[in-house]
Length: 329
Length: 258
Image (tube, rainbow over all chains, first blue to last red; front, side):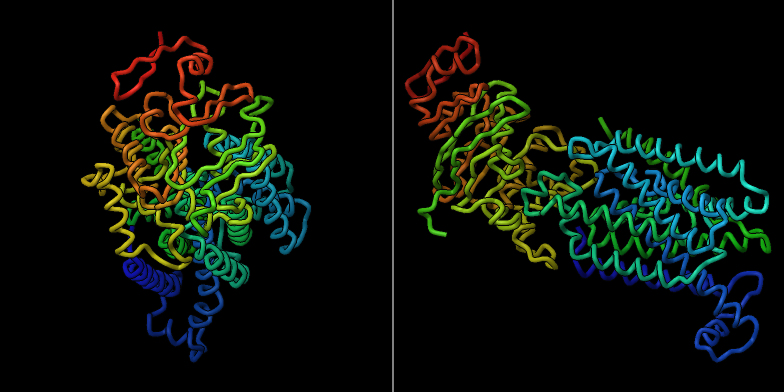
């Protein structure tokens, strides 16, 4: 278990890393902007075209990416504690699938951007409620039942989405596909996901030590003084809102919620007091970096960032799954 | 909280699983320094009764009072300072060192923003040494054997330092030496200030380490009294549904299946 000083030191280091990630995201792209010019653009003293690109295109996109990555990693970390399952993740549990179905339905019916977001949000919450409601059963969430329900719900959402895609008119298809693959290019105001990220993190941090106990088993947590029922409900709501906010903002981006908490757990141990804020920072930095890659690798063509994270995520997930079986006797 | 208030009291407790009765109108009072053994067949509801007493499960009716207050009145944290519970083997999903696992026992003693202090670590280390696991503190929980894992769970309980120990089969997975050492530990630890209720499968151990016994017959009827009164070959024959015979060497009495 790290002590408070070490935890703060690690978080400080990760914040510096996040700042570097942000600087990188602002500087590179189809127009490379020198570091000094990035700074002056941010301070608003520069009226040139590249300064305008930095301020009104790259900055909101990078901040939005950071917020979504942070939210997804945080949601993953919370779900892993809630379900006592290191493989839990908003994407695996079908939540992103629900959001995708909601968004595609909204696009199909020709609704505006606000409605697309609203439908996506409702879809995420609906999928989450379905998965948790169906696998709750006897009062505890059994691992296999939950993962299976998640997989089935995801498959159902996928089928419904495919149906809509196949009957949708040509001109709507592109928007739908890009939304589904996870995309930060038509970024809305990053203020919403950023404030949700801060709110969820600051609501969870006071309960971090109780979450440590919950991760070891709900009965022993109850006996050691944790109000388990209330805490679980709170964690469930926090993870739902975090996921829904991220997915609504950026479409379905997979595996950040799985990989990031896992890596941090490997490096620093499973203390939620450090794991939660560190996940938010690393998840944010990672997605911001992946998005920068997505728009620079084959520039001027842009890749959907969800494809990139999935390409990294799938082998990592499979590796973890194989290793997990190996450690169980 | 004066010492005169019993550590735990059951009032007209009715406990059942499904439509099976565990106990009807159970009344008992346990004071500091007393140890109560709970015996019964598999499925008689020993663990269920213990989790009701631990506040993990609702009774069908009746009350459980810890130092005169119900669990609802105490709230989780205060009750964690009074009673500790040793469950049957938990599944460890995440990696954790043995020391970290024992440190969670300090949770009820810490304020919301506190981190575990040097004193807490010291208490955890002492608890580990007490169960003979002092050299294991850096080991991963998931690499331990069943008996070692059980001793770590007991160390966590010792670090919690409650006034009442609720022990669900504390001797599971333990070899004979560690069975005796563990029960002796709860006999001597805290001395006259703590009380224990333990589910046991060995009447001889109950006779040796507990002052009182509660037999659950599985149909809602119980027998409750001092071990000397309650633990007889006749009662145990009825309890286990198998003929039991008493043998003794003048120092200890044991019961063996015929």
